[in-house]
Amino acid sequence: MVRPGGRSARVQEAVHTAVRELVAEVGRDALTVPQVATRAGVTPSTVYRRWGDLKELLSDVAVERLRPEAPPEDLGNLSADLTAWAEEFLDEMSSPPGRAYIRDALLGDPDGGNGGQCSAYAAEQIDVVLARAADRGETAPDVETVIDRVVAPMMYRILFRPDGLDPAYAHRLVTGLLTAGA
Amino acid sequence: MVRPGGRSARVQEAVHTAVRELVAEVGRDALTVPQVATRAGVTPSTVYRRWGDLKELLSDVAVERLRPEAPPEDLGNLSADLTAWAEEFLDEMSSPPGRAYIRDALLGDPDGGNGGQCSAYAAEQIDVVLARAADRGETAPDVETVIDRVVAPMMYRILFRPDGLDPAYAHRLVTGLLTAGA
DNA sequence: CGCTAGAAGCAAGGATTTTGCATTAGTGTG
DNA sequence: CACACTAATGCAAAATCCTTGCTTCTAGCG
Image (cartoon, rainbow over all chains, first blue to last red; front, side, top):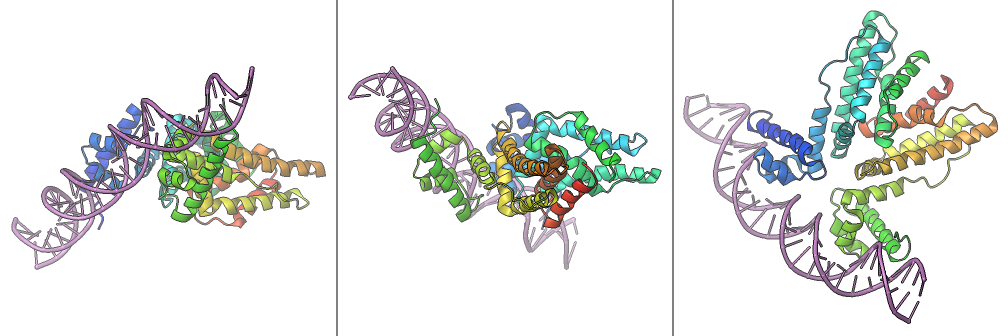
C-alpha cells in the first residue's frame, strides 16, 4: 500500500528541500546522503530505503525542478509562440544548472520513467501552443513532429555539444519546421 | 609527463577489460571499484587515483565501446547508405546495453568531453556517407543538418522515451530529410 | 648505468552503505 | 471513535567502500 500523505510526504518534502539547498551550498559533486539526511532531520537509512541511491534521489529532485511553472505565453500566432517557447526552453536547459538537472534526471533512472516525465512536460507545453494555433485556424504540425524537429535537436546539442548554443539556433529550428512544410 | 606506454597501458587495459567482464557478469548496478580492481589484479587505490570515481571509469569504458568499428557500408546511393547507417545506429543504441553506455558516457563527464566524443564519432560516420554522395554527384545535405534531422531525434527518443522504437522510425527520418528538401 | 619523476602498492583511518529489530504513525474497518 | 494492520521511520552495529600518506617500482632520459 502506498502512502502519499502524512509523514511520508513531509519527509519527501524535507529531503528534497535539503538536496536543493545543499546543491546550492556545497555543490553537486560534494553532496552525500548522510549530509542530506542530517539537513532534512532524517536518518540516512530512511533515504537509502526510499531512494536507494544518491543518484536516484537527485533524479527525483531534478524532475520536479524541470516541471514547467506556467503555460507558454500567447503572442498571437503559432510562429511567435513556438519561437518564444523554444528560445526560453533552450536558454533554461542549456545553462549549467539546467544541464545538470537534465543529466541527473536521466542518470538515476532505473526504469526510464523520469526521462519520460521530462519529455511529457515538453510535450504538454507544445500541445498548448499547437491547440491555440488550431483554434485560430492556423495549420500546425504534429506534436511528435515538433519534438523531432525542435526539441530533439536542442536537447542533443545540450547533452552532447554544450558549446556554441544561442537563441538563434532555436529560432532557426522553428522557422525551418514551419516554412519547409511539416 | 604522460606515460602512454609500459605498465600504465597494461593497467588501463586490464581495468577496462575487468569492467566489461564484470558488467556482463554481475550487472552495472552491482559494480564496485574494489571488485574491478581485484579482477584486474590491481589495488583499489590505483583505480581511484587514475579515474577518481566509478562513474568516470565507466564513462571511459563507454566511450571506447561506442567507437564505431568500421566505416558505414557503401550501398550505391545516399538514401540507401544513410538509411542503413541510421537503422544500425538506432538498433545498437536503443538496446539496453547501448542505452547504458550512452548514459555512462554522459554521466562521468566532468568537462563534457566524452559526450562530444560520441557526437564526433557519429559525425565522422555521416561525413563518410556524405562524401561518397558528393563523389557520385548526388546533392547531399550538410552534416549538421543530418545530425539535427536524423541523429538528434533518434537519440532523444532513446534517452527520453525508450519505448516503441523500431527501424521504420530511422527510415522515416531519413526519407523525411532527403525528400522534403534539406 | 644511474637519475628522475610519474605510477602503483600497501595499510591505516574515516566515511558511507547495508541490515535487523524496535517504534511510530497513516489507513481502513467495525 | 477505537482498534487492528501495515507501511515507513529511527536506531545502531556491521560490512563495505573511499581517502590518504608513505614506500616501492618502473619507464624515460642523459
